[in-house]
Length: 252
Length: 227
Image 1 (cartoon, chains in turn cyan, yellow):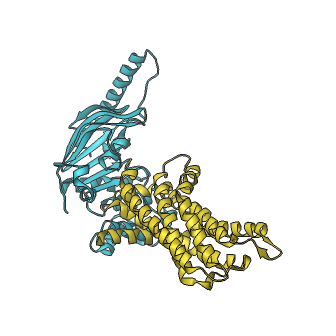
Image 2 (cartoon, each protein chain N blue to C red):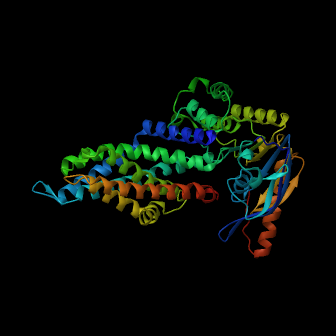
Image 3 (tube, chains in turn yellow, green):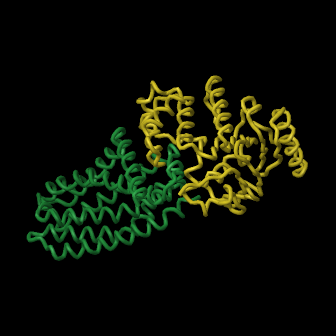
């Protein structure tokens, strides 16, 4: 069963872990051809939201719609259109770069897995290290390989958690160019990041989270750094005022 | 169905490739199982004469202990690299992932049993080859019954903090009927004249357990793995 969508709607989503509330009534809409940034300090709920969008985590309340369907109705046809690059890279260190990608290509039932994998390794700049164990790779090389793993099946929705971690300048710029290419192809890209320098000029929409709440959604990433700091610091002042304390949460 | 089997095959092949490279789990489980047998041999064999039916009990206890160790390590590997999440993201029926992992565990336990059978045969003077067909049937059905529940629990507990303690605590009470059936069936074929009708009865009972456990595991795997 093929499944496609060009709109992602997060509708009033909350998620609890026991008594702790990780997300509180988050609503957000993303369209095809958009790169959406999730910004916020550590523990803001960015990774939880990405896990919910990837269907790995079910919301405690609220719903996520992929086009007209939700995760339950679309089933595994939806997962064929999702790509996730988490903070953990989902690679097997005991396998070679080629074996890792071939495993995922076969798991996804992709046609011509060998050719796809060879192309992906070339894009990642790892063609010469294709038959080396991933355990011997640097963090940046693993990150590039993991990105190709997430893109191997040409997902409609790409979810990236701190994708610039461990990348040198050239690799970071290559990733930015790759994400722009995906935007051009009509994919929805959601990026959780702290790297405002790379994010600025890349993002079409910015959602700022703090303590599991969505503080601000803006359609422009212009002067991102200033506005992000203002939003986070204003929220921290409000929280401190509410507690009557002097300590403030600061963006990391 | 083809897609289901393809995914199960791909996952099993990956697990075996990883294990062939590291040999971490096979060495530790075989070493652990062989150590169990040696300790029991010192305790239960006096003046070259083992206790009656001891061999059958030692065989299944060693399989259970080694299996628990192997199950824990297999999923610890997936937890360490968080790759279980990547498997859960695959666009296939999630029970296919379960079947792939189960097949990998069965292959591992087959290696352990291939070492244990001759070892127990020599140390406990157990004529395992008196009824090779029934021995194979008992080992196969018993191992499937044990591993089917074990694979489900090990996957379920992969994020639990005290998973190493919880796995045997949950697994052994449920699989005790399987282990008892394995012991009684094996004891029947180790008699001076193998009691094949009795072995057939225990194999049938083990088959029943297998059907129940595998069906329940396939049914519950997806909801249990959705966080």
